[in-house]
Amino acid sequence: MSEITNADEARGALEQAREEFRELVLGLSEDEWNRDSNNAGWTNGQLCWHIAFGAGAGGQTISRLRRNKSMNPPGPIMAVFNLASLWMVRIRSRGATPESVLAFFDEGHGKSVKLTDTVGDDEWGNSGVVLGQPMTVGSAFEFMGEHMREHAAEMRRD
Image 1 (cartoon, one colour):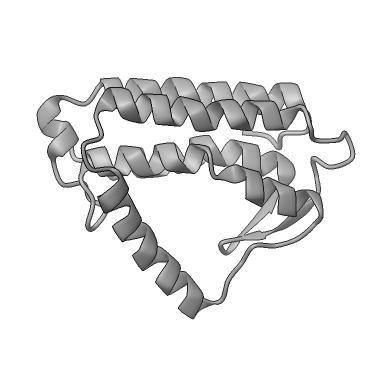
Image 2 (tube, one colour):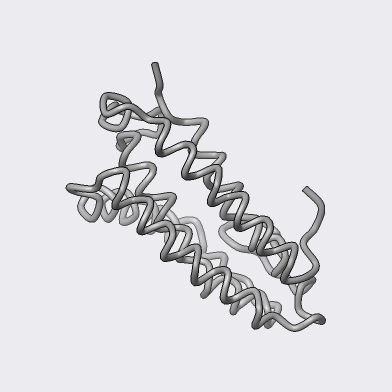
C-alpha cells in the first residue's frame, strides 16, 4: 500500500481493516475461536480481542507522531510491556464472544476515523519510531490493518 497522505485515504484504509477483521472473526467456528493460536499464550479468540484492543489504541501514537516524537521504549521495558500485554489480554478477554469483540473493535475504529479529520495537511508525513518501527502519521493509520493481518496469519483454523 502506498503512503497515506490525507484523511480520505486514512478512512479508506481503516474501513478496509474493519471489513477484513469482520470477515476474520465471523469466519471462525466456535471450535476455532477457542483453539490455541500460533501466538504463544493466546487462543484465537484472545488474539481477536488483542486486535480489537489495538484498534482503539492508536490515538496516543498518532498524537506523538504528529509532533515528530517517537514511542520506542528500551528492550527491558518492552519485555515488561509484552508480559503485561499477555496477561491483560488473557484477563480482559474472559467471556469475550465474536459479537463482543466486533463491537469492541468498532468502538476503536470509530475513534480512529474521527481522528483522521483532526490531522493537518502538513502532518501526514511527520514521523518517529514506534515500538522499533519507523512510522509516519499516515502509516500509523495503516497499522490497524497490518496488525490485524499479522495476527490473522497466526490463527489456527480447520
